[in-house]
Image 1 (tube, helix red, strand yellow):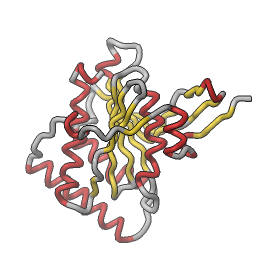
Image 2 (tube, one colour):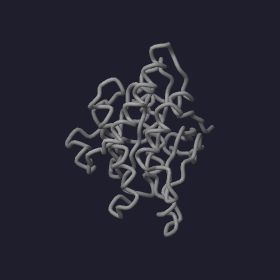
Image 3 (cartoon, rainbow, N blue to C red):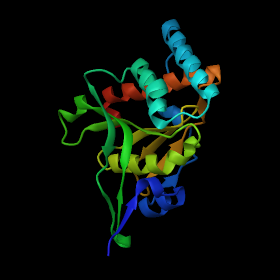
Image 4 (cartoon, rainbow, N blue to C red):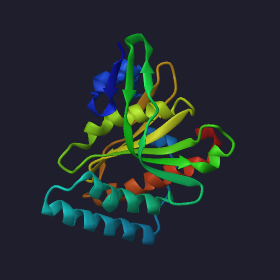
Amino acid sequence: MTAILDARNLSLEDVHRLLKLEESLNESPLSLLSLEHLTEFEQQEVLKIRDVFRSYYASGRFSEGQVKFLTIAPLMWLAGFYQQGIKITIEENIADISIEDEDTVVKGRMDILAVSRTKSKTSITPFWVLVVETKNSSIEALEGLPQLLTYAYKSSEHQESVWGLTTNGLSYWFVNLKQGNPPTYQLLPELNLFDLQRSLQLLQILKAICKLQYTSGSL
């Protein structure tokens, strides 16, 4: 009898075992991105997002939905994801992942997916620019890593690598997953909206990931 697993219930150990994923510690994932200086306008907008977030954070716990609208949505707007070449989807089901040697199927639903429609014109499978997993403020952001890796793994079947982000509004963890035997992933250092420099770097990284849709080598 086939076992049906929900990606939300997987541990990092489960993901390593079922998907044969391994964490790579050999190089800095930032070497994969070209970070640009932010304009004065962009810096001021990040500070506005940061101030709004801090006011909500000070008042107590807030939900996943608030995380999406108060931080992720405006940051993705600033980073350039809201354009004709990219389609944003919310709460999208992932295709089932079959683990044949264990007679197991993994199902799941991603929170936010940025799909490059520009690439999809020349390919049956569109290029996934970024996968985002959100948690409410009372949950550690890294608890979303197993889900995020599961979703990124599925997309990497049709492209060389994919970027993901798991966040609870305060803490932000970017991950890059690459094809291979075995497939590997790398975590960037934690970013957050409390520290000024790390909040600015958050937008820099999002902008760099967004621009990957125009780089053929990313596929």
